[in-house]
Image (spheres, rainbow, N blue to C red):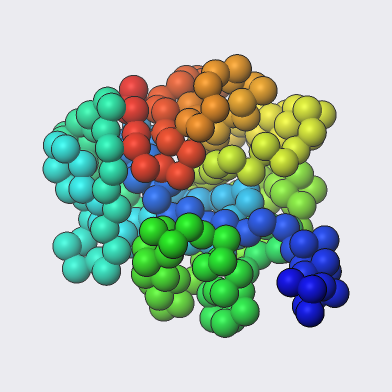
Length: 247
């Protein structure tokens, strides 16, 4: 540590934590299926705090739940976990069409860069690295679009330009814990204004300060427009290791 003190000091000062927890897709998949089943429309995905964009590729993974499986049996990555509220088998029979994938991040990571992949690896616990590397290999075949910037600044323009031929689904998991109370209010105002202007879905995890519940797990909410229908739809462990499905 002492012999590399200058490097360590600069790294800790300049490099924010960069995680891309693919296991969260285990909790998110039933929500995306619910949106697709409800609207019967193709989806345009827009993730806030996307890192390398691995969670934007959720439909390229396969999943195993108590009531059945979802996804291609040939997919190289299978996600499964605990269920405290069972995902219905009828929901797993539904397919969705993803038309476009886009992520916004202050420092998006490139899956084709060895340095960026190393960053993702060192910020992942050893038991989570195998699925991370499998997801990276999948992403390298067809990575999503990633935009560098502050999503509070970039999001309004992207939502204003969205295409009505698909349903835009904005997704945010745990990134808002880094925002101030004023910034969280600004984000919600942006989403709500866009919802009033046209069909939209928003999937997000409120912060512990917002939901006021126990730490270590997060409620997941879904809001859909028109109608501004907002509801608590699931609870997930911080890394997606278990799902409490409400529906």
